[in-house]
Image 1 (cartoon, helix red, strand yellow):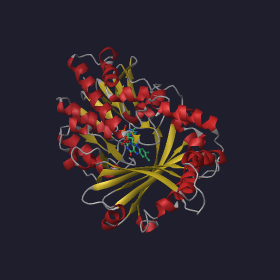
Image 2 (cartoon, protein in one colour):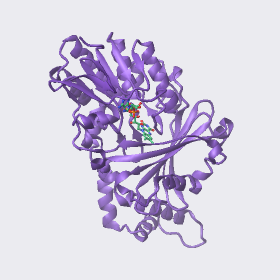
Image 3 (tube, protein in one colour):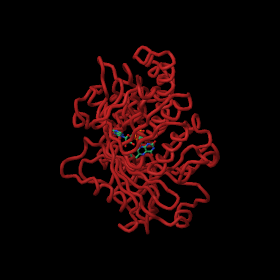
Image 4 (cartoon, helix red, strand yellow):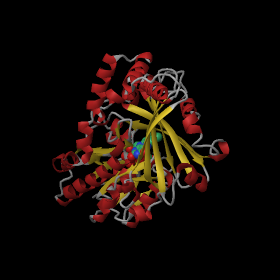
Length: 437
Ligand SMILES: Cc1cc2nc3c(=O)[nH]c(=O)nc-3n(C[C@H](O)[C@H](O)[C@H](O)COP(=O)(O)OP(=O)(O)OC[C@H]3O[C@@H](n4cnc5c(N)ncnc54)[C@H](O)[C@@H]3O)c2cc1C
């Protein structure tokens, strides 16, 4: 006797998607989350890229609490006081289906879990799952405090800091500190800013929004970090992502966020949103950046693992994407579970279909192809040399001094050399970066 057909642990975007899909296929599902209300523990930048949710909720872009849709994307290099920014404005992004939906997870995840409820899922918040329930080495459900719940299949979607995969020995590492080099730490503030001010400042109308990502060359010490901002309806999400293994005990991560916020390029964009009175939300969370190289066992007798818990994040310095991978893996986990249940075989023999579905989708195709991207994104020169050199070079070339002009490539090469990157370093890093991107 089991209580449900399937249990989903974690009502982030991945877990709720899995639960909704299973319910749509007629299965009895229990969805559990430690957050109360659901969403209160969740954090993203956050742009939900793509349209995977349409597979289970065709009208989600009309109905979900979406702050704005990305029309304008900026990617830039910040040095001490200067910035060089590529400004992308793609008209197609301005219409349905939108390419990037800017969301605040506290609202969005609560809405998504409600969709699960409406689809017939039993949703419980404020429940922390302590461990998987095992019988003869098979997962047969979960345990929370003194309660146990049984189901033929448990889908583990408990996020980056996945205690369940650790406790069950599904990861290569024995504890999280062993995997420091595989994680980034994200910190984020949400700053209240008047809706009209946002539209004027960023030249936006209606639901249009801006997403900005930056390589931070303005942080002293050895810290390697990137920064981001996203325009919400009447606030701005702003934050940094820091390579955990570049932090020393003296570094204070909130100071890194402050340095990003006070950079002259950024400061004017968040003006009037600073100060404690405007701080609507703040938080920090791990990001599993090693992707394919940190994947735990994805399936076994009675269980599947997806989303951040499986390391399904793609980050190359130009984008950070995890929500779309979590949603897609949740939907595929539901499909594999449903087929296994229909065959009355919740063992690894049937559940290995999940791995196959992932391999045929962009989830594992991307993660495999870009499995070495961290060799590029962790390159010290990317933070300590290139932002300064790019800014120095372009500033020199664009500043009129009433003197004879030099060719641009010579000016740029000089700037790189002055910052410590000669021709060989450039070639080596260029090749390494070019093939990894
Ligand atoms: C600062 C920052 C910026 C980011 N920006 C972006 C972005 O712009 N775009 C993007 O696509 N991705 C972004 N990401 C990554 C993205 O947030 C994740 O990839 C995504 O949230 C993964 O979804 P998930 O459902 O797998 O896990 P999560 O969203 O982490 O959900 C896990 C859920 O499990 C619950 N839970 C955990 N343990 C237990 C337990 N033991 N029992 C019960 N419940 C439990 C938690 O409460 C949570 O609700 C960002 C991440 C950070 C930190």
